[in-house]
Length: 83
Image (cartoon, rainbow, N blue to C red):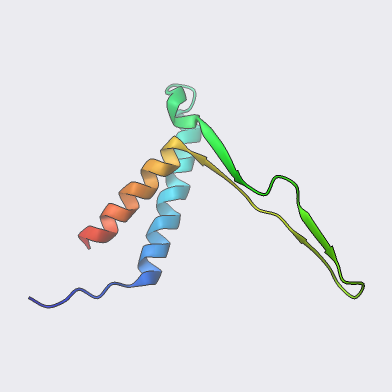
C-alpha cells in the first residue's frame, strides 16, 4: 500500500466550498425546511478600533453558521477523507 498524499490546500478548498454551498442551500430551502436556516453568529460583535496616530486599524469578524453549512462542512470533510 502506498501512503496517501494529504494536501492541506485541498482540505481548505473543500471545506470552504462545502460551507458556502451548505449556506446557500440553507438560505434557499429555509422557507420549506426552517431547521436548515437556523443560524448562530460567532465572532466579535463590535469592531475593535486601534489608532496608532500614523495608521488606524479596525478589526472585526462575524461568522454566521447555519445548520446547512455545518452539514456542508461535514460532507466536505468526509469527501476529503475518501480521496
